Length: 114
Image 1 (cartoon, rainbow, N blue to C red):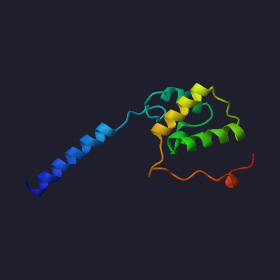
Image 2 (cartoon, helix red, strand yellow):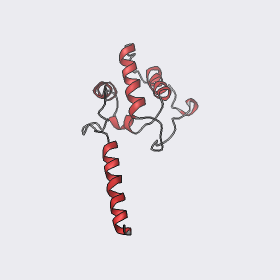
Image 3 (cartoon, rainbow, N blue to C red):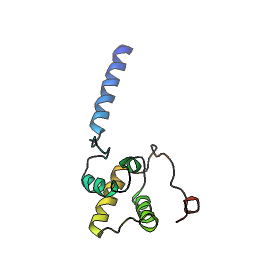
Image 4 (cartoon, rainbow, N blue to C red):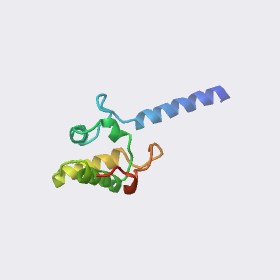
């Protein structure tokens, strides 16, 4: 197989692989469409842009600490346990830690005063 043909085949295989791995995204909010995405959209976008959520990455523990901080300092309401579980499951599954993370969360001493 010549070099040009090899590169073409490789490019085609890569695009097929990437297409299969691509996730559907809500065009309005940018949230990944997966179980409970509408619940997360409804709860999170009451107070801030969906971009604030979709730009973040974290483990379940990280997402929990972010939400606990919002509840303690920003007036976020408490969630029913089942709703909270669904929110954490969605965020941890669809916005996990990774290379695309824009920055680490600020440590408490660097956050604005309450």
